[in-house]
Length: 595
Image (tube, rainbow, N blue to C red; front, top):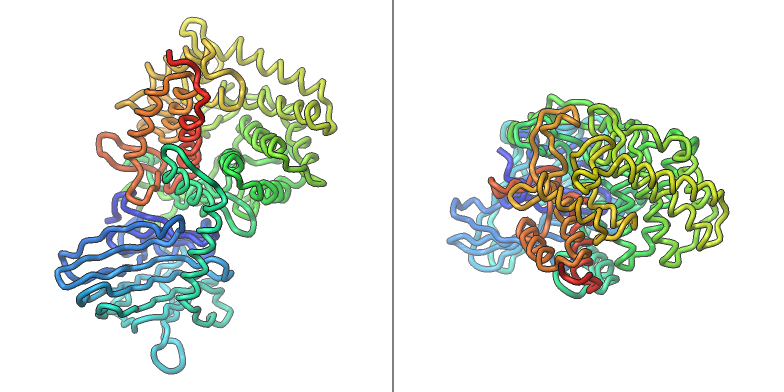
């Protein structure tokens, strides 16, 4: 059985990532990209779905772990009655290869280690052809299946049924290196790399990247870790930003709310860009604009709300039978049918992020403004249609209030680009549409009975996404209507002190009810509290949320308060970027007078 979600840590080369468990097992790895088929898939089943275990053999071995400074190099310290070893896990930066390195270093005494390799390509659907590398010993282990191949170099692995194993002893001062390299099966195996050089280069790469932001104030350590994780989820070459490293980790244990998050949502990526930009990472903007230009190229009426890492449009959703699911939660899905939904808000988040880039002094490129004009032009004719909203409901489309506010934001930023930055466009038309969008929200998306904005037009229900209204400047956080909305959210959606996204029992999303509090929404509430002067409430909630991070600072999508465990795909970009925003709000000092 797979470990609790919080027991996993991510290592990454900014192309893909592996989840390493506290027990020393890599239970999730897709090569060469995040959205490739898995080679180790035990997190969505058992060891039979593929894993790579490296741990002491002693039954009383205990581990602690940490990241090496601000890097994505994971260091696990194992203590046994016989001695102590350190395992360094990393995916090297800068070599343009798909490698995983596992270095075992003896600290004291003598520790017997066990390595177990179960290779299952194609989402555990394909057992590979395995053979030894030609040449003198030690020979690497080669495994091939269809287009995929790996070579594993280190202690000699021996076949044991459907797995390969090795036992070896590490003494004080001794180092044992194991290297796994993916390559296209029609090519020759890449030569061995220098582990010392890879560790030094990778540590320096991450250290240099993290040093570009000067973070101070409360929660600074977690802010930097979150920024590093957001960078890890950003593809080094394409600039695409995945929403999470995993697929189908359940939103409700045993339920069907299991989705593939290894793709690039325009919304989530734009919000990530905003956060990175606010912390000094200006170079991400052009990379992101170029990605968008490639992905959205053509008729803007064909724009999707998500794409593959290189801008792929075909994200056909299907259910896998080869992976039984996380602790029995099925189905396991790859692809995502939401790619074909109409979500009216996504252009708003995109325009907000690109406006912030202009404010930071980043110039438009030859095509970046024409792309934005095309996206806004699409909204000019489509914005009044019902949509599936930020939560991608699979029920009846509705006029979601959050979506209409983001439409307002799109027209607002387009008009301001003309007024404030001298760009060309039909500014009067955009200002007129901006006002129409606001009127529709105020007349149809606000309940005078509850003194609250509503989830969608014509209801009195609320939705945690309404907490984003002040974030895009639609209203002030202390606006009486916003304060009324917060009161309604507190009344309807708070469970065990944390907000749900919405009431799934109302059958809005077309799925069976039941999920846990959503971490991004909780961080949005922190930001709202801080902005409206409820600083003590903001800090109290923030401190509680910080306790939900795992031992290496990772957040998943949701949190099970009763079970005291993380829920959903991990690490979740939306959770981490919302955490950074919440910390910035608390530390900004620009709070209104306490109420």
